[in-house]
Length: 170
Image 1 (spheres, rainbow, N blue to C red):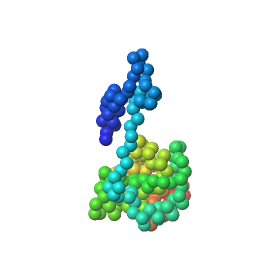
Image 2 (cartoon, rainbow, N blue to C red):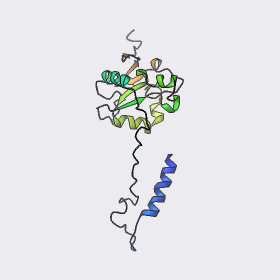
Image 3 (spheres, helix red, strand yellow):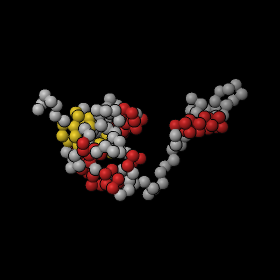
């Protein structure tokens, strides 16, 4: 659902379900204090979604991260709970070759919920040159460095992290 449709839905529900007394005050329990009704999240139907990452790459990702967030933004919680894909499914799909590419360790970062949501809420910043948290479909994850826990590094498909060498180190 787009943001515009969600806003229209909230406004429509607020008009329909906000019960007001004659003096204009809200009836207790009919809405939030802001005047908007409570929207219930619909649970996903069982069996409808594939796991974000198959079991073997997920285990290797957990070993690489040590259970800690690999992005570490200022909103970071610390404990990694979500696999965050650098190339999203909408950019590459989940069938055939794209499915194999999607599950590669160089394409996935172990993230805490806060960092993962921030990346989805700020797609332009996630794709900003220099951090590598989000890539385009044509980009090869092993060839594009990522800001890994504050250090610009290359990720490989075997669970390795290789810091980028600067000209001063060479």
